[in-house]
Length: 265
Image 1 (tube, rainbow, N blue to C red):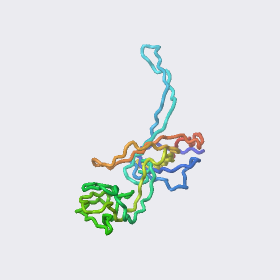
Image 2: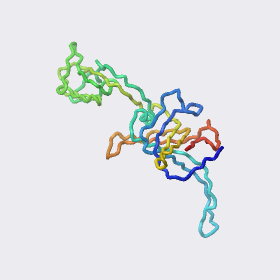
Image 3: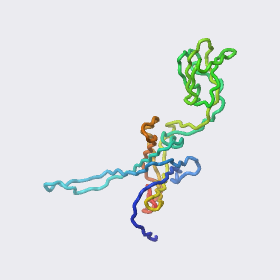
Image 4: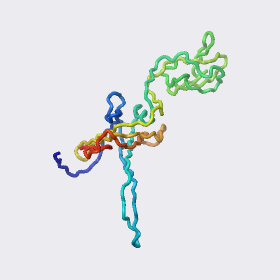
């Protein structure tokens, strides 16, 4: 193999990161549409904790280190993203992303079917969350009576919450009429440990935007340690994806590629 001459230069890194699902053979899986191009990666770092066996010599007045060997080395990493996508949230929460179809939400009965009192605050019935249009709330009389917004109830369509102000003279159960918003949803903690192939395109802006590529063949993403939903200060909320670098036994242990990761530029 020919030797390529390189010169020392400064490094100031930018770049873009992808996470690919892996096949059983240890390569990126193109049969599923779950590859993720991460939005706005603020930082990406790998750390290498080691365990050493050491021996101190006490033959002289001052103890000195006589022996040191690395017993084990591990690879861990962290990705910090400052933009939100539902695909990223799904990965972050060990979740499953799916589609909320939306459409008519008519005649769904509030629970409980009877005994709702004035002042009660309830979520919309069933698994409905947001409504693009809240048409009315009616009762269950033979000729249903329509409750009056602002007099008999108050509603927050975006939160999917209703407050009943007046229930006197109505026949329960109360029923919902409206149109549900279409959208995406993530059900958390529905999958187990997630393994991915990580690729990071490195752009060195201190060296004429010279590009490099980092491949980490097999990472296992840790569960989210925290999920902050209230933003304080002037910085957007961030997603921290912590992961373990695992040995990829589908790869050769050769010096050209290894079984953990490689960096090319």
